[in-house]
Length: 103
Image 1: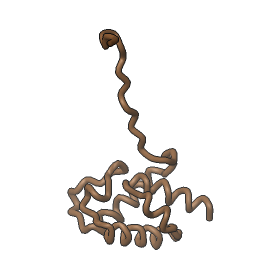
Image 2: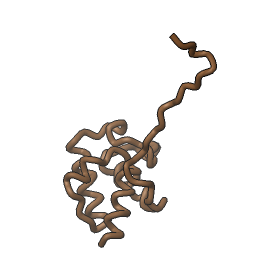
Image 3: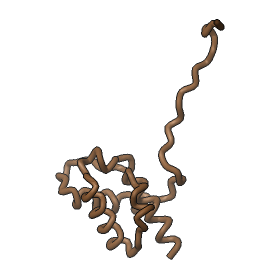
């Protein structure tokens, strides 16, 4: 058996999203505010681009309602398949930017 001394152990890379981050900071901020309002979070609650909807207490119905609020606020339509891939505020903001640019 080969010795492990001197060998390097690679650490796994953290993959944030399938798509590169492209959302403007103001888009992320607006998504954060909509999420806070939709989930009735207190003003002192911290919601950032990295915030996961599940960690904020959102269930599947809450997530659907968040997506509907985002569609209304940004004048876009999110396909169900795309909506299911949204796990974080950043995911939502990136998708919004992509859909707004495609309009």
